[in-house]
Image 1 (cartoon, rainbow, N blue to C red):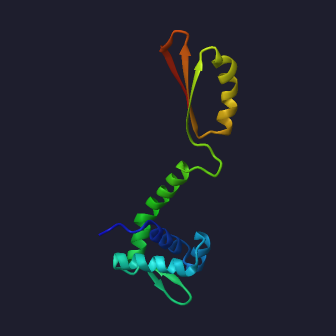
Image 2 (image 1 turned 180 degrees about the horizontal axis):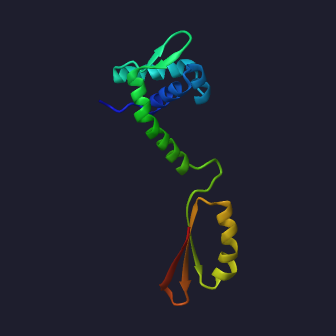
Image 3 (image 1 turned 90 degrees about the horizontal axis):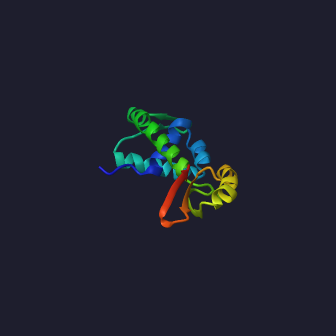
Length: 144
C-alpha cells in the first residue's frame, strides 16, 4: 500500500482535532469542500471510514481514533522539523565562509561578528584565517 499523502493526512488530523470541517478549513486556509475531499480521498485510499459524519457533528470511528493516536504525534514532529529548517522571507540561513588575513580578525571580524550573529542567528559563520606564510599556513576557526 502506498503511504497516505501528507496533505490528506494533515486535513484529517485537523478535522479530528477540531471535530469540524468548517473550522478545519479556516485553520488550513482552504475551502470546506477541499477539506472534505481530502478526507474522503484518504478514506478511499485506506479503505476505511475514519470519520462518522452527520449534518451536525463529526466524530472519530475506531480506525480514525487509531490513526490520530499513531500518526498525529509523528506528523506534528514532521511539521515542527520543517518549520525549524525553513527560512522566513528575508531570513538568512546557511553557512557564511570568510577568508581573512590574520591582521583583519581583531580589527574587522571580531568587532562585527557578534552583531552579525545577533541579526542572523541561523547562519553558521566560518572564518578561515590565513597566516603570512600563505595557503599552507591556514587555520580554520568556526563560530556557530
